[in-house]
Image (cartoon, rainbow, N blue to C red):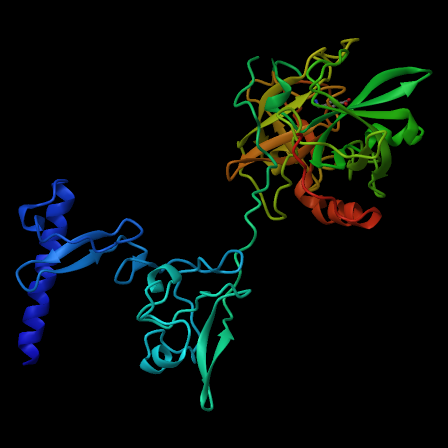
Length: 434
Ligand code: 4AZ
């Protein structure tokens, strides 16, 4: 008896497989599906097949990740959205009663025999569902002599508000030292910091927008200067240094927080990092556009391998001895350099610390230079641009064996976060410009 059942089952499976293979290869329905063919209401891309040899029973052949008579069960679903009305996963609780239990069918409002059962996700199972608009999926459980709705412990999916940081609107720049002119939409996080001296605005440093209200830059930009915040202006979305256009957003400086341990005693710049809080005259922060966007901060333990190609950008000088700054935003590729090599071979064993990262190019032609300070060195990671370094210092510009040295951002994530949170409550995501 058992053998016969196994044989029948095996044959049925074989027929099913053959049928499925046939219907996959030949997109026209085979003859046997002709007049008797019934739609079996397969959901989620399931295929309707018929056990023709036996009883002409229709059945859904489900794609991977789905099961159930109509492929209505999403076996990969691990959480529910909103109130879980659309949840069709397999989460359940130990005490959940099947929706097709005769006592449930007899006594309760929601069960597998309803005409709308498929629509409501109810069937021959005890998975958590929300057929009646409760706040989360639930199931029937037995309590003494009654059956009651019991909320399930299943997790709510995290809101899918994909961060917009680190995404450029323009894929590549067309043509710092030996870089190319860049359109600001390829570096939409770049900030230009200006200082007003005797009534005239002078370009001071670069920076990076890490939050609608915050620009990250280098501490040495402010060190020697009077930190009179009224003297500064920050521009976002700026392609040309000394011209304004309608892509730009301009801000006053609300606060400057330099790292308390910034020092250049070793000859390098240790802890060369500063936060600037920006706001418009009417008290607003940056608004996301094609030309203005935040850059992502890396994760704490992101350690990109030597030779990783990254990008620097800024309005800085094209040569150390140039009088004028580049009139346009420039951008260039540099490669990360081994910490050991940079510290011991290229510099003097003490100036380059673990709080710094070096980058250059193999021909020593590309480098950040005066005025690029505070600006971003971004590296792609998981499809987004991360702020890996802040232009800090170097021995001259594009000099052989003297790479550019950058503040290693991953070393300052807690400092950044605590300072952004300490002064003001965390700002909201960059709102879209209408
Ligand atoms: C500066 O003076 C400066 N080559 C910035 C970067 C580098 C050198 C100098 C790196 O702002």
